[in-house]
Length: 277
Picture 1 (cartoon, rainbow, N blue to C red):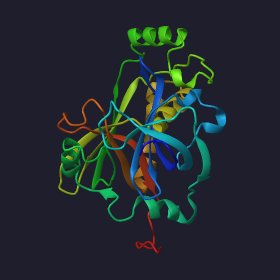
Picture 2: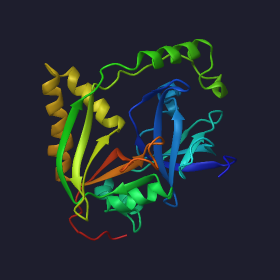
Picture 3: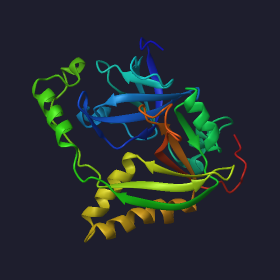
């Protein structure tokens, strides 16, 4: 793709915002074209977008994409900021997620063995996938640094003051925004179809938003964390839970297991067991 034509993308993933000295506060977005091929869209200054451009999960959006020259992962593109994002439709949940099942769970879309995905990453065949764990063992969390790196934050602020962040979008509002850093890392531990056990971090924006919502309604961190667990363990275990997996650019072909959970897919169990399409 050269970015010359509008592409229609189903948004399936938005990661929790991170800080980049070069790009400021950014979000990594992933989605599918209508033919089922994956796209990673980065960087996106999501909270700096106009309100009508702030897409939701399972929105169909139209945008222009340009292949990223500094990211060799096969699905990686940057948005053409001059064109922005246009929401054109939404893939709903009617019929026990019938339309979502049709696109997301069709033949060849779902992986069940982590080892094959690790090999695919090392050979640079793929860096995005839908994965079905065989058994989910636990949902856990660990304490992380509560604040963003002060040096990176200072570098971002300096570049912002010089109007260097996202030079190609000078028409956008340049308010300096920094989302609070999550003070915890969240993980799922699970086994795959070969019996291999993995423990992967969850980087989805939704778990971050859930934590902050729970923290505001709780007396302390322990109570908030138990509420997060209630959603990601008690509630999601009642669904046909799948993961959206992605690799990080730094460890894509290097780490023993470069995959992380960039989103969850808690599909309701299909009572008919066979999808009648």
